[in-house]
Image (cartoon, rainbow, N blue to C red; front, side, top):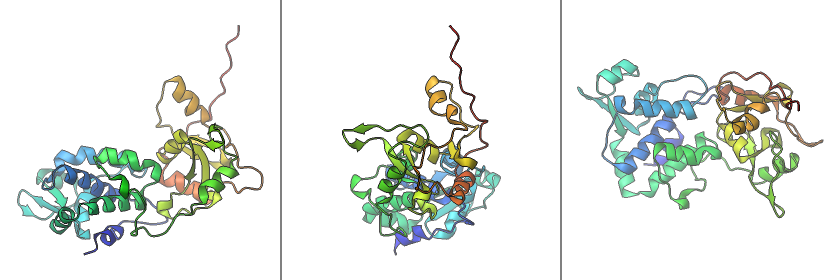
Length: 303
């Protein structure tokens, strides 16, 4: 059985690029638990909090429940659920899963395959990461679910649906003249830029093209905040900051909240700005909550 292909073909609700990472997140969490104890069952009432936090941090902006993937992943042939009454899921309702003592784990055939071929776990995990999340989130997501992946397995896999254009980074950084489009950071060591990255506005995992009009040159901090939905790009190519972001330190104020309403820095004349449909996708699928009002410039204290 080709488990990688089965993972690629997970049944998910999709429409117009809508993100639905519920099943991938549950599978990544289950793989992390499998590494700790291959025979351990995950009782829904015990792991619901963990799964809810994963959905809140790495899922779509709208509120959702981990009960849905816990029940529906069974139909993909990679997951099984039993209750205190015996095999089978009681349904996708929170109350049913809690009160029935529902517990889930990877399907028996998949567990056997993972025991025979340990590298398969790493390949499945990398496929899930590549197909559903941007690279900027892979490392911290592995930490969040307790996955320890081998460095040798960090490349893209044959199960992925298409290949990236390796030229995109250079094209995007050139378009923005090697400056962060949010803060203007332009650090280098000798002639080599450091801490600057090419961010996809519409994620590559959701059919975002490797084109300049789907890219932003961002420093590492603002790339991570952009992919976590703290920052966005609105009409007039002005920076948006989520009202859900909370930070009281001078650093949080200067590097995040003060950006609200500022125009992007770049791209240079002749380079394509971020396309409206990519900005719209990011606002619907990644950006959290409503934007803050434009920041008011601080006036120096009178002396």
